[in-house]
Image 1 (cartoon, rainbow, N blue to C red):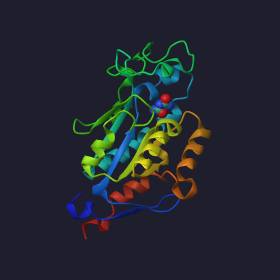
Image 2 (tube, rainbow, N blue to C red):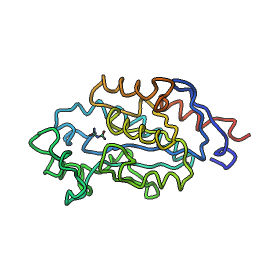
Image 3 (tube, rainbow, N blue to C red):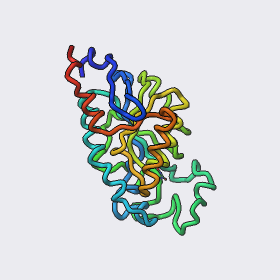
Length: 234
Ligand code: C5J
């Protein structure tokens, strides 16, 4: 995208009203598209979840990521996980769920949610380029105990398009954190997923309710169309 394009304000049809953004001040933030959450045979499926509910987001994310990269705008990825020595894992998080195997234990794709293990890594379809920051986060929100806010400030970012999994957990927590830090967030509904259809619906409603209390909801085709808007060359 050339310089005159990136400094113009663009509009995307969204709920509860059109989302205005300046491409030069916008980043794509892809949350936790990790093998353990999305792949058959991973930790998510081991817990009894239907990974197809998340896998339907892969193709829309792939197309959005390609358009975003083609526009020359920043992309950041996150991964939920912990240090191998578990020093950043709160005991309460380790114990939660009372399942036989929890974070740090051997899982189907290496130690569960441990950095460096195969299951912790991002799925190949959306693999980060070497130039794209990967934020390793110990919590649900991407701003907690990470340098995400500092990186976004250094890039001059004010608008975030937030995608990934899961809608009601890490995506919602991150959008709420971003909102409190002054970012305007747009969530493309087809690029976020939940294991639970009812939480997908509620998670999106909570973002856009009350005049967009946390942000806006749209879909990837509208974001891509805005990025490719013809008048950008005027
Ligand atoms: C969860 C996430 N669901 N990425 N993590 O534990 O939403």
